[in-house]
Structures are given as C-alpha cells and as structure tokens.
Image (cartoon, rainbow, N blue to C red):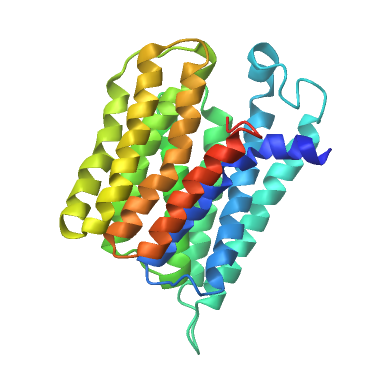
Length: 294
C-alpha cells in the first residue's frame, strides 16, 4: 500500500480533533501539558482513530463500489484484506499505547489507572468495530459514532486519573451531542441533501452548556463565539443545499470539535490548552484541503 493511499484511508486531516479530545479528557482529569503521558495518549488515540478509518473503508467496500468508486479499495489501490489487517493492527497498537500511558501515571507501589484505562480502551475498540460494521441503515449509528469520541475522552481521563471527574463527564456529554448531529448529517452525505432536521437539535446542547461555563469563566466566551460561528456556517450550507454543500458542512463540523474542546478547556480555566485547541481547528481545516476529511 502506498503512503498516499494510507493517508487517504486514514483521513489524517482530522487527527488534530482527536488530539484536542485527548486534552479535554486528560487535562480536566488533572494532567498537565508538560507530562509525557499526554503525547503518548495522543498517539494512542490517533492509532485508534486511524484503525477505525481503515476499517470503515474495509467494511464499506461494497457501498463505496456503487457510490464512491474512487475510494482506495474499489479503485484497486488497496485490497480489503490488507486494509482489514492494518485496521485491526492499529486498534491493537492503540490499546497498547493507552496501557503504557496509564502505567506512566501510576504512583509508586500501585497501578490503579491501568485496569480502567484498558477497559475503556477495549470498549473504544469494540465500539469502533461496531460502528464500522453496522452503521449503514442503522438508526442508532449517530449515537454509536458519538460514543467513539466520548470513549476517547473517557480513556484519556481514566489513563491519567483512574476516575472520571464531573467536568470530564459533562464535556463528554456535550461532545456526544455534537457528534450525534454531525453523524446524522454525514449519513446523508452521498445524497447531497437531508431528510428530517430534528437530529440537528442536538447541536444546541453544547451551546447551552458552553454558555453556562462562560457565565463563570469569561475566557470561554471567545471560543464559544467561534463555535457558534462554525455551527452557523455549517447550517447555512445545509439550508442552501447546493451540490457539495452537505459534505462541506460535515467537514466543517468535524473541525468544529476542536473549537468545542476549546470551550471546555477555557471553561476550566485552561487558557493555553484552549488556544492550542483553536489552533487545531485551523490546522484541521487546512489539512482537509489536502486530504478529504470524509
């Protein structure tokens, strides 16, 4: 498999959103930017993400042959067997990385974070496979996809603390609502239009929670305003519904995850990580011009 093909399969343009999800989970659980376990967790969660993207193409090869014949497997640039093998291998490597990060977090004489981190990592791998194998025509697929990102946050938090503080749970809930709205739109991408619009109401939940955070942490107002602008831009594309508008709305909302993460971080008084999360949003948009985010 050529490197360019692997990069397309992995949809690596969206990786910065994974890194900001990790920051939310780890930093809200008590880690700091200076700790070695943070980049290790980012690497581990990136491997989970890449494995999921590979398996998505492998399981969707029949659908892609009909609707997206330019994708690597139907176009003959990669075989289903090698994509399946790489996908499952990446998930295993991600689980190993999460275990290593949890071990780094252990205090002298104990390893309390290892078992919770392994359990969350295994749940993440299983949820990824469940989504990839059964997301077509599955009405629960937006929830399952949302749980994949929630488990990134949860695994990062458990790897550093062994527990889930309340801010982590609330941030994960806001992210879940964002992902439900996003995944519903993504399911309609090949149609170029949307059916029912009520699932988009989930996108209002992060706005409400972000406003609650900003009421006590004014630094969160700026990233919240940016997040609101991202939602407005995506919804404007959906309302216009010209050819290509739905895919553009999807990649905009994918990048917008990092801005939502910035709101969560700023709301916790973590100014520098919030700035880095906004920078990750810009980086994701730039990378999507190079490699498609869907």
